Image 1 (cartoon, one colour):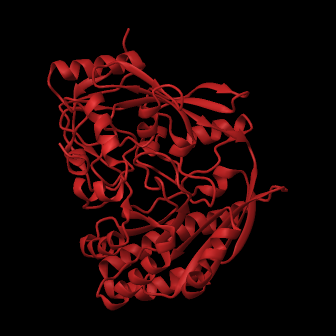
Image 2 (image 1 turned 45 degrees about the vertical axis):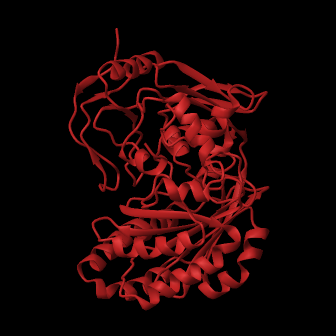
Image 3 (image 1 turned 90 degrees about the vertical axis):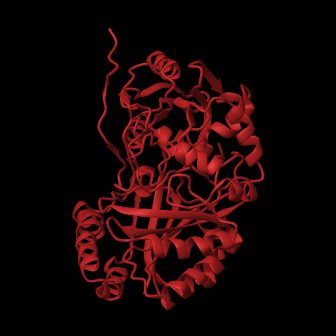
Length: 439
């Protein structure tokens, strides 16, 4: 008996609440076969199809007025291969579940982003990444993919099987098919020592190249309206394990970073003139700390304060200029920005439309509190990012289109040609893909 749920759908909303969609129907397939059947049926009814994860994208990448596929029944680890050091996982599995399950098996991904609410397919398809000198995005750790294509057939790809599809589909933005399973490279679980400390903005700018070169994972947050940053260095450690004490963890990660920060944003939203003062206090609230723990407990943290985000990858050598221009723009404007700017890095990778494709990259992410007008800030920031040939994160707010992408991605034509082959009738098309990839 099929457990697929097909019903008259209501309105779908993303996490930030800035994207809504009203699909004709929703399907929750329990097997890959049911998913294939749903795609074939959509074709018979001449409907577009999109799969949606947990809605953590700020773009309409997953929105559709056709058939919305919800993958929450396609979850769990299918296979662990300790000889090849890989794990194959169903596409709807949340990263949190994957990380915890791997840890129980004494395994870990090499690198990850800073939240783990997304599904594995949603995170990789949009190019989710953490920070790393040598280790790249989550998609760069993929060793194999299973994909349901526009005619309902199941295609497997890897470096040796359908390598052209593999090169593109690891960051496929939902344009080539619906990912049903992913095989990741894993390694024996290890320990990371995190060193978090405040540092003046000018010092970080002057020493950025050294900080990047000396640490496996370096990132920092700059607080607009201040000359202050919080830096974080994560490096492998022989141990012993020394996690943040529970009370400190609650106070700093929940009370300060989520609870007090939420209230500060409410105040700033009501009285924007208070934001620079709040920023000065916020930037000094978190004290220096050092702790050692397993990777997902160091890389990721809870994010309960809702926001809207724009992030661009610029060539790493352009980072300092980009940030100085961003700071100068905020300082001379009447903008009031209550969220810190997040800065991370990634080595070059070989994925066709990865933001780090073919070039070492630095990421600059700007945020605004949910419900606060963000257009003026994001427009001004985007102007700076694009002047440095920035590539926007596929799941975050931007206004770029096909013409722009064709300029900043040398292999853009390779991706669109593959899409023409795999989805000639544009079964997986939506307004967002029409804008970024063309009709």
